[in-house]
Image (cartoon, rainbow, N blue to C red; front, side, top):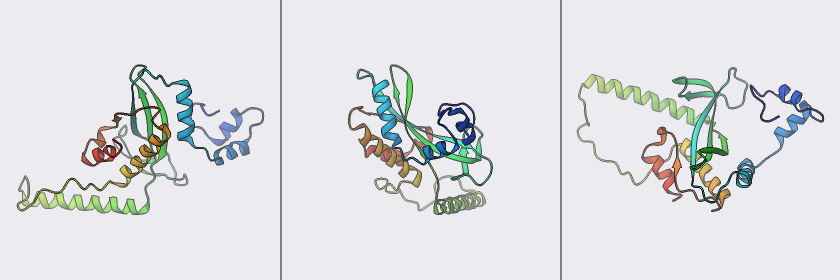
Length: 204
């Protein structure tokens, strides 16, 4: 029932559930609180884990497009496949990848929902960036502005997105509890910057 292809609607799941399954049964199943990081780790540990293999912790974002305005968490999400922001829901997934088997197993998936304050801050930052580009074009002086100084890079303020991902990694390492030694994180090129480096260095 959970591996059915296509759009997994409530009615579709109820029809595929067979004897003992109904619309209300599916609803009760969704209302049940399940510790997915622990459940996925137990499944991977018993069926996939190879003590002689080397594993890395991988993370990437995924956007599920959604039309309409009633679905919980619908927002304008940047999707690389479409090349521009699209209406939908954004998720961030952590998985562990096997070097020998060249296979990835999911460990944790979190809905990356922005708050109203984060949306307002993003709009303000975009407006400031546009104004900066206009001023720079009017001045016509390329390069570094006169009088600017190097900024202190030891103190890094993580963005809300990186804070959520940092929390995910911290929770996942607590679940793994040293059974699966994680030496390297693998993420998209979007995280190839100084703040993301501090985001993972705190975990060693």
